[in-house]
Length: 411
Image 1 (cartoon, rainbow, N blue to C red):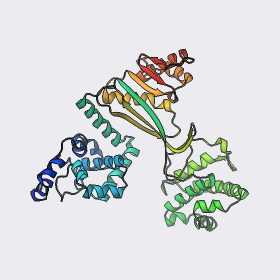
Image 2: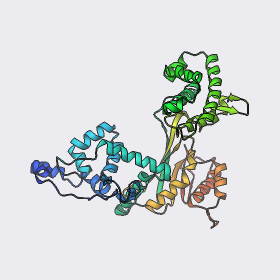
Image 3: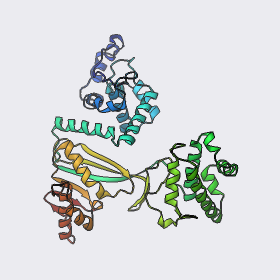
Image 4: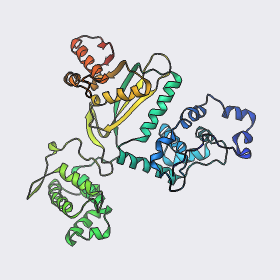
């Protein structure tokens, strides 16, 4: 059941930090310019718990743990790069971290590990079912509040992207297909497994004797090709015997079959390597990851785009973060990055980005697009097409092309 937590709670007088520390230590601990005090004041206290109400029942179940504590813990974990174990150690025994979370006494406690993991699972389920990332929305609200408080302007912004590798093994085709098969098979109940013929169950049992990488290691190229062809027919048979009602992992089998094989009425044959799309499955343990080569870097994972204000004076803030499969092109981030930034820090007049975000052809096409029924170009389209014109005009000059509302920085 959803219930908002109180920002400040009654202190245990004898257990409070102030009671147990000397006056000198107390002054240092309560320094208003310390990172823990600023984090508590501008992050922990400003987390809008009502945003997460949809994760809980309105009337049933026990009240939720303080959401601002759970979200603040997630932020601290990523900010310091802690493991989960290190996070709970710091939150339980590091007084500075406890202060950052708003805890005021030695005996104050944080949510348990099980509560923390259940909260993260609820966030994931909500994103899958509703298509809304509540952590991103929380981040935007925090940034918007900080921008208003400190007078941060969105007049000038800059953005850049980076490929981030997923924590998955680099799979060969055979290893990938065998891994997907084993993940699916282990997700089935005993009764569901019994539907398969004894011969086929023995085939899978033989595969299960070794890890996929060990199986692949001992096979010759001809044996690998033969096994790949055999697996194609086997996967097709699984599709006829099982459905999502037996296991949601059947979607892995369907995907790997469509991406790695060509199917007709009577035959299942292996695709050529060049025919496999870069968006194809890279690992059964991270189905969203994709493959991409950028400059001299090859990655199985994601492309992360970060946008921040870059005014010459005053505070600057990160205004937008987007994470997409690695195949996402840089110029695909631009419009949403500008629109998201404007909702947080106001109107954007100048954008700085490197040449990977654009090419003349795509700019020309982008400039012709319209938004909605108004027939007017979006702000991103205007900025992009402005770059296109300047880029063509200044292609042979040595200075940085610059237009009224756009700065183009070549890679």
